[in-house]
Structure formats: structure tokens, C-alpha cells
Length: 505
Image (cartoon, rainbow, N blue to C red):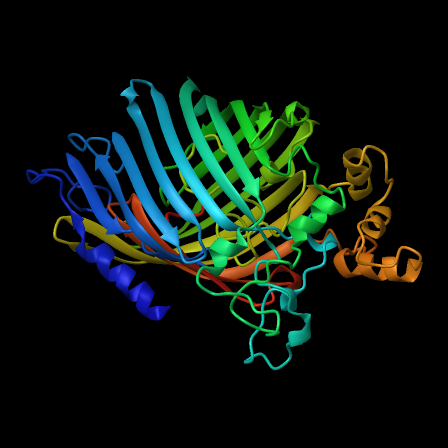
């Protein structure tokens, strides 16, 4: 892992190239360094690591146009293209364009992304209310306390999910820093069971071997059980296409977009998502038209400025919430964190390197949630290599997530079973694998998967960690974060590591 991070840092420093030779600028920025002008881009291998997605390999480029540099570090145009794949069978194919100058007076963002995922995380509904068993999907001879007889399959908490996202967003000015926002887009979800044959590859499963690399094709996964127990309906189990329209307002006084030193950014917006035709078959998904409300508040407070006027320490925090206020949303969309502008590859919540760092991705799945991120940003050193401006920073942080709108599990069962079963225990008993004439057996199996009677089921999910940032020209930032959960129910491995682009917020 250390060698991989070192390679990334070396490549970041060596490979950025100027698209064309620039005339030496006569002006300097707030740090006393020459401003950037004209075209500037870096061609990099898309090498990264995410504890939830694995090691990533591919290629990316981020092209900036600064014009005469009068607005630096603000850019006139930004074009981002990436194609990559990870060791855990997750793909990234993305194009993004961002500009405040293409349409004078308006900011325009366009995004087209395809994210195939052969092993998308699925830990059930309502966070702690669904019990998590580390031994069921991890087995190692090196872990002395592990009961190898509990192991089921390493994809027990997985399902197949491909996401297609196409979006266009625009922003205009109401008065000074107060803006209006509108957007159109479509989210396409193609969902299925894990393709065990593809994941096994050349490895053949042998029933005579209790522990092996090959996956057991007959082992039911949690996603399979949720379908049998009517927690997931037939009209959502294969995914669907969801065009949406979005509108809201923002208030933005940040001194810059990427890694701001001071200012406030807050937004409030509504997203109405329609639904049509399940991804496979002819099931109608019109019942999943829904309206969601999002609110976010970010604050950046400068804490220490050196004698040269360079801000060295910034206190930054973000609080936000997403709630369903009308209609019903399919389970797979409740992992998606709505945003007014698509600036990152992933918008997933709650859990993982893009929301609550250190917690397993998708650990919290509910109709509504709230979150908070708090960090100190230390700018340790600034330096130049050639005509490129760099800095290195450290960021200790604390993240938190909490459910605001939990699923009513019994209501889901009754709805998806057409009133055949009125509570979850009934549906588990009827699904088989237990003796329906033995109530004790039914209750034991229910308690094995669910903890609905625990008063602590809705406690906040909390994590803490530290990050390393390497920035180039104030806009291109490589981020390496290490984080751990406060509660082992969020990740028994106790630590997660992420190497990504940009700040979390």
C-alpha cells in the first residue's frame, strides 16, 4: 500500500504537462506566485485505492483553460475524462464539463457516467437494525478469533448493480452570492444477482472443500433473502430508469471552489424523480415516483495565517440531510446522495470514502438520513516544480451519519406480499430453511439477521481519521484518507484507506 501511494505521488509530480508553451505572466496570485494562463492539463494513470472498491487502474485527464489568468485560480473551462477498473470488479467511465463562462452569467455542468459494479455492497436496511456478521464473508487462517464454520461466501453482502448517469445543471444569479439552480438528468439502474460464474473465472467450486477461493453458486446472499422475505419488491429487484428534474437555491461566499480557505456554501433543493419500465421484464415502476428534499451547509473558517499572508490552517465542516417527502423511492436509489452539481464520480450515502469515511460503503440504507463532516486542514508546504504550483496538506477529521427516516420492515413485507404476510417474522418463516412449526426456530433466525428491538439501533454512525492532500495549481488535488469506525458494527476491520481525487467537500 505504501509503495502504491508513493508511485501515485511521483506520477502526480512528474506527468503534468502544459498543453502549449505559455508566455511568462507578469502578475502573481495571492501567494506571490505567477498566475496560470492558457490551457493546462495533466495526463495521469487513474491509480487509486478504496477499501470498498479495491485497487484501481486506468487513465484520466483534467484539462483547464485559464484564459489571460485574470480570474485565476478560477478556471474558464474544465474538462474531465476518466476510464478505469478496480480489482473488485467496479468500473468508472466518465466525462464531465464545468464552466461559468460558456454561457455568460451562468454556470453550466454536464456529466455522463457509467459505473458497472459486479459486487455492489448491500448490508440490509436501517443500519444497525440489520445485524452485520464479519465472519460470514471473511475467512482467514491468520485471524485467531475467527470461527471458520461461520463463513458463507465473500459475496454474501453483495449484488450486481450497474449505474448510468446523465445530467445537466445550470446556475444563475439572484443577487450577488445568492444563486438559483436547476437541472435535468436520468439515473439508470441495472440490477441482478451476482454473476458467480464470472467472479469464479477459472476457479471451480468443489463442495468437498469447506474453504476455498471459488464461490459456492448455491449459497444464498443477503440480497436473495431480502427478495424472499418481501423486503424488496418484484417491481424494484431488477432496477429501473428514473428521469429527474431538480431546482433549488445556493448561497456561496467561498474564496475558491477547490479547497477553500474561507466562506460559506449552503444549498436547499428539491428533486422529483419519475420512474418507467423496470430494467428487465415488463414490471411497471410508476409507483416509485417520488420527491426528495436536500439541505447542505458548509463553513470554512481560516484559523492561522503566516507572515507572508498564506493561510495555513482552516477549520471546515459540513452538515446535510436528504429525506423523502412524497411518494416512494426504490431501495437502490436511497444509496444515491443528490447534488446540485455533479463534480465527483461517486455520490453514495451513507458509508464509504464519499460520505462517512471509515464506515463500510452503503452500511446505512434508509428513506432519509443526515450527516456531518468536521476537519482541520493544515497547509504544510507550498512549492513549484517547473511552472506547476503544488502544496501538501494534512487533514484530521471526524464524520457522522444518522437515520432520519427508517424503513418500516413490517409495512414493506405486507405491501410487497400483497397482504399475504403482515410482519417480517411471518415472511421469514414462510420462506423455508427453518421449521415453521417451531416458533423458537423462527425467532432465532429472525434475531440472527435483525435487531429491531435494540434501543441503540438508531445511534449515530461515527468515524475518525486523517488525510494527506497533494494539490496542483489550486484545482487538481490528490487525496489519501485513512479512517476507522467508532463502532465495530460499521466495519470490524477497524480501518479503511482511500486514495481519491479532490476534497470530500
